[in-house]
Length: 344
Image 1 (tube, rainbow, N blue to C red):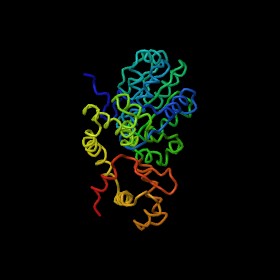
Image 2 (image 1 turned 180 degrees about the horizontal axis):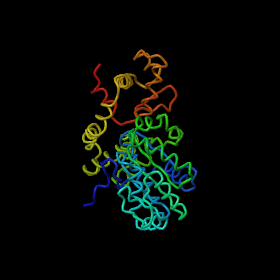
Image 3 (image 1 turned 90 degrees about the vertical axis):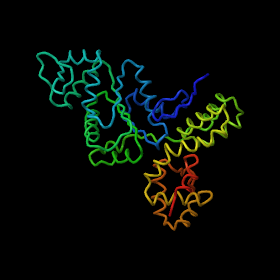
Image 4 (image 1 turned 30 degrees about the horizontal axis):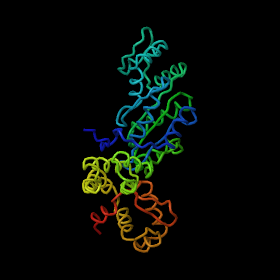
């Protein structure tokens, strides 16, 4: 029996993955031609941030001139970078020839008759200078960043390395509030100017084509399935998974689809919303068409109050405001969830 091609594990690259061609090309091109050295990827839970970053990392790792390091935000990032680079046999030889002694940090790169370096910033600078001479570039990937002292320290150090014209590149993913918190740190203004990729919904036509191919159904049926996902990356995988388990009958898959989205995403999203944000999204369920004028009247909001809630929820990936004077939900079946869970 053929294996289910859809994966519902957060962050794991699925067999069936729809490429975000434009954003992917922009990052790869600007890294390779050295016009940018940092990108921040944000989006709601399940929007495909980790998978998107992993795809770029794997692509660059195929090029022998690139060294890719994947790190956790909770680690001592500068030290982990040094350890990761020194653990590569080919790179270790480069550092030894450059008399870079990292024994002070407990990293197994000792050079006889060379004084151990005691500053991690000095160590990384020397290591990257050596790699630059050999035509190497280093990509650092950090998933789900949070604002910590370690993260702030690394960001400050990265800024210095970039100013020194060293071949170091950075990809970070995170929820909007975490990325925004890091960008707004007073000593990290360069992050505020860093390009940010906000992961929008997937192309519905690509989703429909995928479902039609895998389930051997009419395009009309595949199009209806695609619309049920609203382009939400996690929903694409979940609906595909349960439809596969139900022998291609997506109608039978809908109850499991709804429950899985609620328990693995919506409960968490709802718990993190402030009272005012909950009231706003509930108001949206009570106003047909999502017209701004009617929402303001229903909730008794001033223009300024409405704009604050609208902008914040758009940035969090919960609503879409592309149509002038109208807002709509982004997540599939989220209206019904809000109606069941909102209490005045």
